[in-house]
Image 1: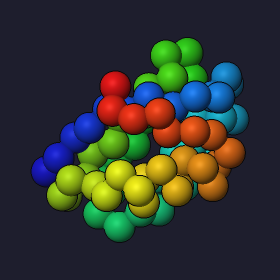
Image 2 (image 1 turned 30 degrees about the horizontal axis):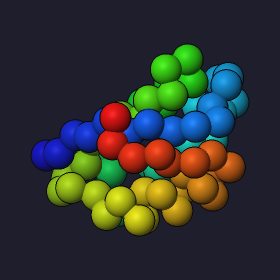
Image 3 (image 1 turned 45 degrees about the vertical axis):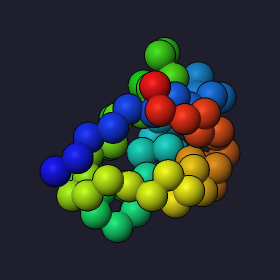
Image 4 (image 1 turned 30 degrees about the vertical axis):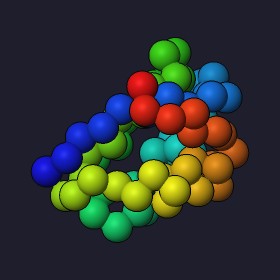
Length: 70
């Protein structure tokens, strides 16, 4: 089990959190996702460390930008 925290720019509300959560949850191996608009933090738990490019693409698909590890 692996857990990592990332910074995401552009999230400002519950809808933003839901959009990011939906896209990241769809990644293979992801077991839980917590996006917090107020802090801009995205916590992802997965079976193995995630490929950061795949994570970046998922966050981009939701309409936001993954800045990198928090």
